[in-house]
Amino acid sequence: MNRALIFSFSLWQLLILLPLLHQTCCRNPVASAAGGKWDMLVPNTGIPAMHMQLLRYDKVAILDQTTFGPSSNLSLPDGKCVNGTAGKDCTAHSVEYDVLKNTVRPLTVSTDVWCSSGSVMPDGTFYHTGGDGGGGSVVRVLKPCNSGGLCDWKEISNGLLAPRWYASNHVLPDKRQIIIGGRGQFNYEFYPKTSKTKKLFDLPFLSQTNDPGAENNLYPLVVQNVDGNLFIFANNKAILFNYNTGAVIKTYPAIPDGNPRSYPSTGSGLLLPLKNLQGNIQAEVLVCGGAPKGAYESAINGVLMGALKTCGRISINDPNPKWVMETMPLARVMGDMKLLPDGNVLLINGAGSGTAGWELGKDPVLSPVLYKPDAPLGARFEVQTPAASRPRMYHSTAILLRDGRVLVGGSSSHGGYVYTGVDYPTDLSLEAFSPSYLDPQFDPIRPQITSPKSQSGIQYKKSFPIQFTVKGTVNPNLVKVTLVSPSFTTHSMSMNHRLLVLSVTKGVKSLGKSKYEITVAAPATTNLALPGYYMLFVVHQDIPSAGIWVRLPQ
Ligand SMILES: *[C@@H]1O[C@H](CO)[C@@H](O)[C@H](O)[C@H]1NC(C)=O
Ligand SMILES: *[C@@H]1O[C@H](CO)[C@@H](O)[C@H](O)[C@H]1NC(C)=O
Image (cartoon, rainbow, N blue to C red):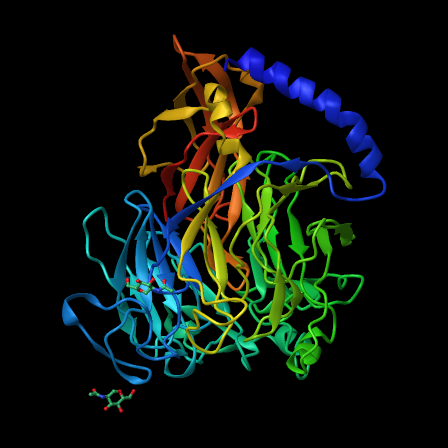
């Protein structure tokens, strides 16, 4: 199909839809439904994907927990066994998923990684921290390996000063990461440490947001603001925090309805795409879903309340910041939010009732929903079809892959691996959700990056050319370049997730048949984009290329 045809087709669709949209817009926030596709990738990886991190060689490190002992559905290689949480254990509790080969390889962890956290350092090494019991103070290091490599975890006991269960991590500009909170830990620490930072630092905000009996402030949302401070959201409150001085720079108003959005009343949240990088940058945070106040107490007494149907959006550097509330088409707790290469946000996974916790969720939300940050208020949500066939509730995850698909895995709602005789069996599979931008009908206008090569270095502030091909006609005014950081994802939180729309310094020029070049400026500072590996995409008429890996130097 050529581009003219696509255009007339979508115009035709629009003309038909317009009166419908008009009718539905004002009674119901559900906009139109749009397509997408689900594919089963690996039916049995051996473990449920409780934690996932995409690494620079298109391999995904996946971790579950070791609490259940030697009972996963995958053996360690070559008869290997470890002294695990429950004694001798010859099964794997972590795997590496090779995206390009669609294969899974067991990895070795012996300490309990249950409800842990992590970040990828600027050199691409994955540092994973904390967990349950004896795993609480352990730091685990995975140096990613290229095709054929057999890299595995190295565990550092007492790497942390405090045991951290349900903490959040963020990379910092100086080759460190900060690890914030965790159950009973109203403090933070750094890793690695210097002699000055070899201690715990108090963070009263975490005790202030702790609901007695329910907590509702675990796995806080931590986002680096464009001024270098950290925006920290927990429960229904947020602060802007200077981790160097310990000063709270700003206290934001609470979310107006006062309902909790953090674990176990688990909502999801992220920094919306940063644009206009050479001008006045708006930094906006979006928090969606969660559970009403009292939902956790109610759930442990056997009554699962309906999830929250609202999102709050706040411009964090406004002189007078205010939450603007929006209504989702579907209520959701334990959902995931992902930044997509085109700058939209995907809401996926989760439940319609209950909270996080064993046996505390039901009514899986099977339909992903797209959120379009730039559309007018009231017209931002779009339900995606088809719906998923598998519930992905407690301990499920979703991450963006370099080819634009969203990898989905996990769901383990029971106190053990339970595969039969229950409503929501433990799910060992990996699936991909392909947003509608991957539909082959858009191939004629889809860019393909030819230069630079993947794994290239780019320099802060410096402009660099990107060459790409497009089979059909290019509209030079509708090309943008986005940079997306791969997140560490667990329990609905996407740590270090960030998308930047790069400033164009030289517009699209033609290099001959089907070949084009656009020149963009790399982010100016580490406040805008931390050092490390990013996926870079060329987006034409909202259709993204496959990404390439680029690296901002440390
Ligand atoms: C567990 O592994 C076995 C052998 O690979 C497989 O047949 C079975 O389907 C797996 N169980 C689940 C729930 O995937
Ligand atoms: C296994 O680890 C435990 C502590 O976690 C220790 O007490 C025990 O001696 C270890 N067993 C072996 C065989 O190393």
